[in-house]
Image (cartoon, rainbow over the protein chains, first blue to last red):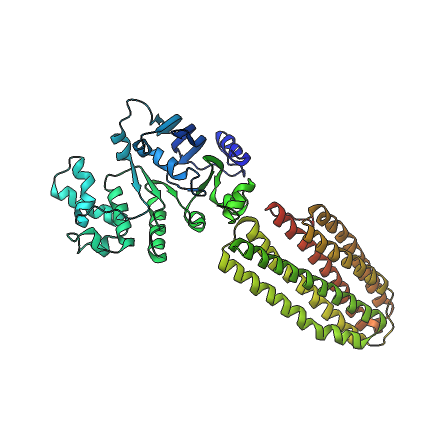
Length: 276
Length: 219
């Protein structure tokens, strides 16, 4: 854990950031405390301490195998799909430990949507892709479903492009559009948090720009955590950045600080392309 | 060669060019003062002619750095280093321009005997040259302690400049016929004082490069 992070934490208690400016009024949506995770004997996450702020974009960066995707998948407990996984420590979502025995994973996932690296729409119509989640949650009224579909597609900035093609198969549109359909699908269940695992790595620069602009819009209503290999993307769109290395958080600070004057040499070496 | 190694090579080439530019600018300043002291019009003309080389090298450094930024998207210290190279190159190019200005004043003065403050102007030049040479060393070694000493020398240059102006005003009241030389020497004093200021600017840039924060060394 870097000094700046420790300072940041301490100063927030007093209501001020490390640089003396008033701390963001944002609450923590996630508080990760002493999180450890093992895949069998492999210690993949080590003593993670991270506060994810509400209505901010938090970028997680680090070389392949550093644990960033594992951490992301821990936030919605998707990582439990791996049979040999063992965890210790706590992740508080809105103050409640997601590992508590009585915390239903379905309940968590209605609050935490996820978008993956490759667009993965269902082999159904655009409309049915978006309506899928709400239907599972028992919404059958056509008028309400229509409203949700339109609202979600508008929210994902793709309504104008597909409003006349709602019955077409979601695979008939471009990769960039498919990814926005997946974001719309995540929005349809009205989540609180959106997890994004390298959401633009399979997209061309124009589609990437659209997703980045969308992320900026979405943070007004959602808290977004994005894993990215694209340093410039993290610098462009995130408010805070966490640098992971070998399962540890090396540095976590405001993105402006991480990319202009990081505290830890390993962070500087990574963002400057010296390893990874 | 890896992409990172290529970046480092280009960065070092830019730094080498900056040192070359700095040496040329300090050299031009020395030649212009020498031309002034010796009433040497030919040497003054040479300083003016050679300024185009300094200007061209500054442009080359800027183009090289801009291309590096565009192609490599550097961040943190890498980015600061490139921005500082551009800014220091501008400072040094200005020093070259002051050398040209002094050379032009030298030509205007011709063979006219110098007034007394020429002694202080010579001292200002020695100090300014020390500052500029020292700041280049500090830049190469990234030595902020050395950079801080430069700011202290700047106070001495400012004091000498004050003395030059006072003496010139006195000379003006004693012999109004010398007003032309008085004005020219006042300008030359000003050019020398500004050259020293550019050394201080570069020292501040070095602090920014090393520490990532802005410092005002003139306080």
